[in-house]
Image 1 (tube, rainbow, N blue to C red):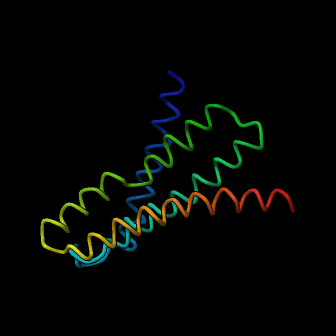
Image 2: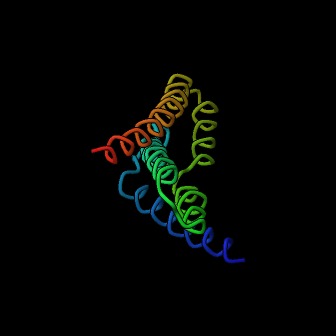
Length: 126
């Protein structure tokens, strides 16, 4: 039951953070490139790379792992929003924008996780 509480608390905080960031940078034209979701997902991927590196190299409370990875970052990143926005772009004939969005989101997400992980590895060796 304690694990569920940590996930729920992290998820609530991550969702509120996502909402706030989305409000701050959401474009007026919803059929334009969804930069708000793109940036949230890339930042979340960098964050999970950093957290994965930290967890690999330090003893970390298991409950905090649930709070940060499953809750906070799970609530912050927006794969379901990404999927729906991609669908709407395709549905509205914005094929090039949709393809760019999907390709960039996935490639930058993986790159972000890689950079976050290795940046932390570099920092702890200094």
